[in-house]
Length: 328
Image (cartoon, rainbow, N blue to C red; front, side, top):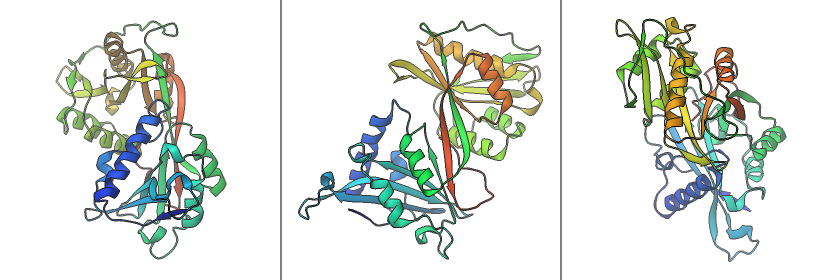
């Protein structure tokens, strides 16, 4: 029913077909918030640092049983294996071929054994991880069937800024001795951002996630400084909206404070400043993601009228001591 072959790089018509597939899937899944794959990921080559492998999965068009029907790419898997042998998986099925058993058949045929000398499928992966964005019923069924546990979770929270469900956004006082900067475009390797991250003492998995996100750039930053000019924290957000559940929605990407700035109410001040600028730009709903184990962040967001909207899970096969990969 399906065929597949690992490739270190995609080229020609096969590359074009996979790019079309991930584009169709991203458009189809945008409102639900399900996983999407960056086109630059599809263009990566396995000749660089670490191991990158591409797996286009093919089947007869419309899953026809007839031999004269042409083969088409119905799903795509991207694997990146780090120096510790941890493989990060990105996977998507074309919308026209979902709920038709393609993924179940793939896992049944390939298996999930990572204990062999060459790792999973001889790719060198001694463990596999994959984020499932949003509460996707297919990911739940698949992981339960094959006994794949979740090793990390993120929550998506939403806060209405306009409309009948919106609560007033109260202004907050800036703590004594602190000044908020003017909004500015985020640039890669911003020294103020680097100063906060180095002083934040974040858990490794949080630091890696934020750093990876910041490297992609885009959006707006507001920072907070003390009287001596030291950066105490920042909030990174966007006013560029997308339509989610028929409402104009924009994200707050990150809120990070240095260790010494915590407990002053500065996080609430920065987050409120970002929400006010989103509201003034016509955004109706603000979204952000948090680690549910961060009790302080959960409490702050609850007090600012955020509500839980979805859960994202990182599933893992095999044992490793390294933290879960960045969640994008």
